[in-house]
Length: 362
Image (cartoon, rainbow, N blue to C red; front, top):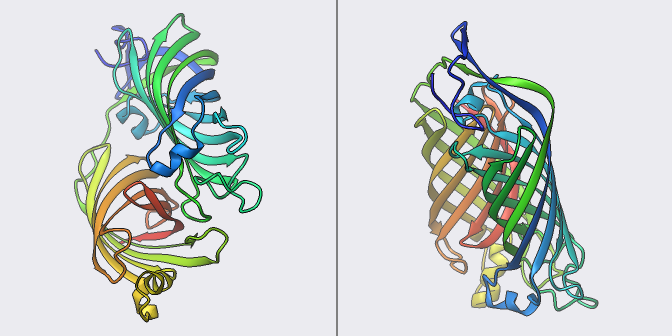
């Protein structure tokens, strides 16, 4: 039987037991060190004011190999899961200082050959040493809070040196943002090339290939609620309550993914103030509501799903940030009916707010 493993094909003498094929064994744990060299991207003209030198990073990771005990692990060709820590020299010690981060991740195999390509993605918490301060650090026009969300993506080429040693090279993007919880919030985007080396250890285990039940390609309905806080310019002002009320129709497209459509009702208590500021006209609380329609695509990992959605406002009195919005959302199934959710809503490359909440399947 042929298939994928870290080193190429499944062994030809794999034993079939109870509709399972036991594959070649691999170590279950690994540690990895990765060095990044890159630069902060000037995605807005204001960002160029804080860019001085190259951004240098060191990343330490611990990961576990999945072996197919759960269906999604086999469907995604036995990805690695783990946690990484980052320390970053942002290239401007006076204005930005250093950056730090810690995040869980999943590394998805894309092929299996002499150079094994994979895609590593994760998000967690980031720390910026010198955020904006009106008196002490007014030149930092990109980040207004020390604690931020961190999003990490890395396209990797992996080469096995031995059964326990592996080297990698890649191109990564690291993003810091507080979701407009504090201004300024233009965000920091670091594009870099990287080199890494890993050491595997622990008990050797075999990959398992089972006959999996196919998911029914049915439509499901979801009701969701979320809430958060945000700040609007100028920095140091009040924080405003935001919430969302959503209805989604999702259909399982394949064993890995789903797609769907939805309607969002947003309540953003800052919009009435923005309308008065921008137009000098009277405003009311009804102006804080927006109605949007969106399409979304979801990648499903067992109880966890990660979706990307793009939508447009069909009712919105405030026009200041355009008519298009997007959402990056993670959902975790607590039960068959109830799930928790964490989402970031943006307008193009500018964060609107981060929200957390719950949802119900029916």
